[in-house]
Image (spheres, protein in one colour):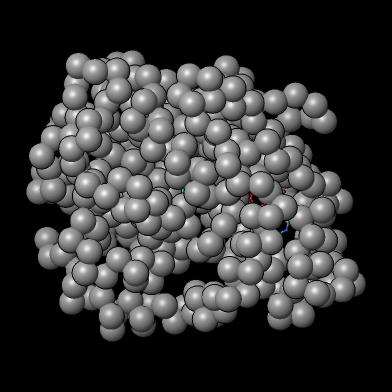
Length: 356
Ligand code: NAD
Ligand code: TYD
């Protein structure tokens, strides 16, 4: 069941295809798996995830018994396993999201970032090349561009200037993916997206961390002066953009994805406090993150004009809905933060995991 038409500039016909999503149990990955099952119901989604601290199969419990979602626990850096998965499931395209994703953790310990983000990506690319996979979507980040001053936007031609071990590892994998296109002719497309928010985000990232600390009446740690700026995008808009680039992006193309929603951190924190009815006295300014990028902002003209994608969520309303999701899903984040979801995983899913 090959869903790809190699001749056509629009890659996918209406028939089914098998897509490998790496990191499909993480924040964006699990939203993407849900999004694809809903919006591309004929596709089979094969989900390869190591289940690090950030991966949670419980995010996908609604898909239990769905024959078009296949979960495989494993490491993208394991070439034998990756070859086996691509061959056994006759993978047509790869959407590569698996990564170590948190800047603060990369400052505490960069090694895992190099292993997964750099070496793991190269293993996947090599396996894709040998298996002649039709398309490889490299999910990169706007952080590869480094930091902006008070004005200006990142475009796809902004030079890469990564600052943290996380962003440097992503810049490496981004460039290695493009090198596989340039050198070996592998059909690679790259996306560079701004900060996401929405359901199932691990509570180490700004928005869920602040919501949960506020609900627990704990201090809200704001780094530096709180005036760093991020350009926020709802995760479902990101999922739609990734699928658009997979389907319609030009071979070797790079696409910025952003939400036109620049906000300072302190504004976000105060909005969250208001939403949960807690006092601003909970805000605690703390020592800044080393090498903290000041501002990110995306020019997404290319994906809008060339591929017809644009964000649909309105930030203030979608942030309020996201806060409500965390209020309504207290058991989810209590389990995630306590590590109890690992027991859930063992008792509910272990027997269902594919054997290799
Ligand atoms: P996440 O940390 O929530 O999830 C990462 C997932 O990858 C987890 O399920 C984890 O178990 C899995 N994983 C980690 N190492 C693995 C390995 N070696 N083999 C297989 N699976 C492994 O991350 P996220 O926020 O969902 O980000 C997903 C991707 O999107 C990353 O590549 C990230 O760089 C990129 N991105 C994220 C954002 C954002 O705002 N979160 C913005 C732009 C780009
Ligand atoms: P984060 O969610 O870690 O994403 P990234 O660093 O990849 O942009 O952080 C978003 C912003 O929030 C960033 O400027 C750092 C800041 N921040 C805090 O002020 N306090 C915190 O506890 C965290 C986690 C982040």
